[in-house]
Image (cartoon, rainbow, N blue to C red; front, side):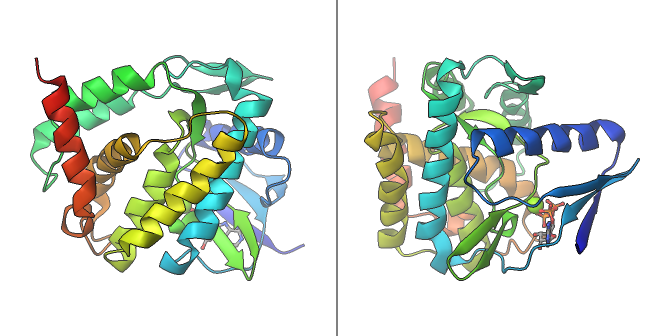
Length: 259
Ligand SMILES: Nc1ncnc2c1ncn2[C@@H]1O[C@H](COP(=O)(O)OP(=O)(O)OP(=O)(O)O)[C@@H](O)[C@H]1O
Ligand SMILES: [Mg+2]
C-alpha cells in the first residue's frame, strides 16, 4: 500500500497525533481516515489517499460532515465531557477548550498584530466563560487542506490538533480558513453551511450553534489564524471578507452585556 509519510518535530507531537488518530477512529467510526501503516522514530506512514483539498464549493458538504462528526462524538462519548476540563477516555486525553487557547488569544490581541478586531479581551473571556457549560464537541483544525475529496468521498486527514470545543467552533474554522484562501464567500452559502451543520445536533435534541456563537467563534478563528496570513494559501484577512452580519451581531451582544 502506498504511504504518505508525515514527520514530526518531536516524539511527543508524534505520540499525540497517534492518540488523536485512534480517538477519531473510535468517536467517528463511519468517517474515512487514512490507516496508520507504520510508526518510525520521527514520523508516521499513513495510507496515501487521493483527493483534492476542500474549496468554497465544498463548504456545505463539509459542514454536513462536521455536523455529523461532532454529533456522533458527542452522542457516543463527549456527552460526559465538560468543556472547561480535559477529557480522558481509553488512555487518550483531549485538552479542554480554554486551556492554552485563552493565553494564545490574549497574547495575539495584546501583540497588536491582528487587524480588524471585532472582539475585545473582555468579550473573549465572556465567550470562554459561556462556552464552559455548552455541550461538548471537538476542534480538529477543519481547514480546507485537512480534507481530501474525490467526488462524493471525503477523507479527513491531519491529526496534529484535537481539543474539546463547542458545537460550531470547528465549522467556524472551516468557514474562516476557506474565505482566507478564496476570498469573500456568498452569505447564502455560509447560512446554508450553518443550517446544514446544525441539522445534526438538532436531530439529537441538542441546541447546535446559534448565529451569535458562530459569529464569535469566527472571530476567535480570525485572531488565531491571522499570524498565518501569507502562508498556507491564506491570501485574504478575515476582517476584509467577513459578512457584515457577523460583526453586527457581536456589537449587539456587547451592548446587552455592558455593565
Ligand atoms: N494520507 C494522505 N494521503 C495523501 N496526501 C496527504 C495525506 N496526508 C496529508 N496529505 C497531504 O499533505 C498535506 C499536508 O498534510 P497535513 O495537513 O497532515 O500537514 P500540515 O503540516 O498540517 O500541513 P498544512 O498546514 O498544509 O495543513 C495535506 O493537505 C495533503 O495535501
Ligand atoms: Mg493540515
